[in-house]
Length: 463
Image (cartoon, rainbow, N blue to C red; front, side):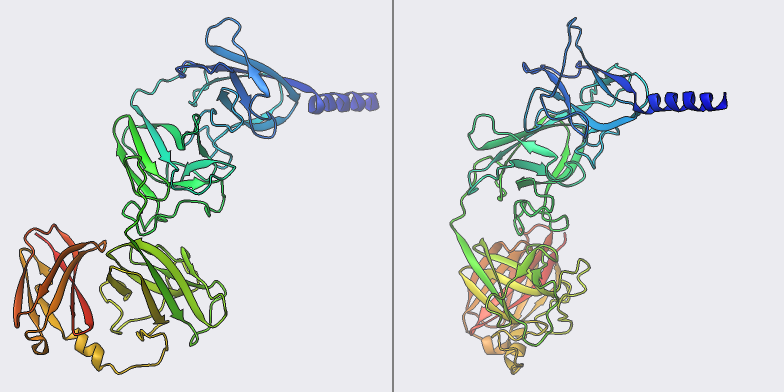
């Protein structure tokens, strides 16, 4: 008798574990303005296939679309609803940032193990689980239109927007170009006041290697991977952008007044870190790892070439290794080429033509030889002028060295982005008062050139 009971119990358990269950999805489409003519679908995860595999129907026309799918007991899978049959998943609901969207699985929903016949009630694009859809009234629509006219080729996997706290990872948000005009579009519903960093990617590259490079441009935030920043949005908004530039009107500017700056760094006096040599810093050269330098012929001279607008100026530094904490950067503390007010970084003054900079890691020799030179010329450059006050309002008093009496001197004022604000020729002796009344609050650099030497000093306008 006990043996019979054991057999019966085993059969019942086997039937329970390996039996079939019916899973019925009832999707309220009340939150959707227009249902796509190709219908409503469920797809995704390990158990629901691809767009178009599982068509949902609404036989009574009440806006509730349903499908019943039979699975093994214990079945579990991610899934998502789609308004249309889109092979690129562009028509799937957007649950980014919502509690029912799994950010580690394309922001899809998750269906836990099902052990009995189950009905799941849902609403397209929301996390309501009772079939009653909550219409969020304090939401806004953000439309992003990206012009790809300056791109050589579009990656076969497409164009994407990602990044920051609000746009997820590469591949999460595909952009579409239905009419083939090169303008890729994505639309997002977000709460009023939404803000986030973001960037565009040519391809769905998990390592972010295919993202646009806007380092050094005014729309790039150097403290956030040189991504763009979307300020708080209060109403429905359309953002016009161009891949790799800061144009905000949708018309992409081909920069013709640009210069090429070549950095050549002699590393023969140091042991090279396995991660390589990099240039970074200053708000224009990004963070450690952004700009690797190369030594193609193995002679210890590492090179980095960049294209910048005419008049470009910036701080920068060299790093022996890819250290996020900047611990492997060169130490120029106390040296004349290290700016103590800018982390002892080097400073590149406004540059108006193609330029090659020869440098040595950790010292100020500027001929690439790494051999110490007579410091008298450097001292002379430092003594070209004095300036006061360093924190000014309406004027800055400049006193030139005696040896520059009646010599022509070029005076240039640049803002913190390297833009030339003032450019004057002065041949007088003694002091000169620079009118700063029209300057807004911020950091500026005064650059004096004379007798083949150039020197810069920083001042601050604070009114």
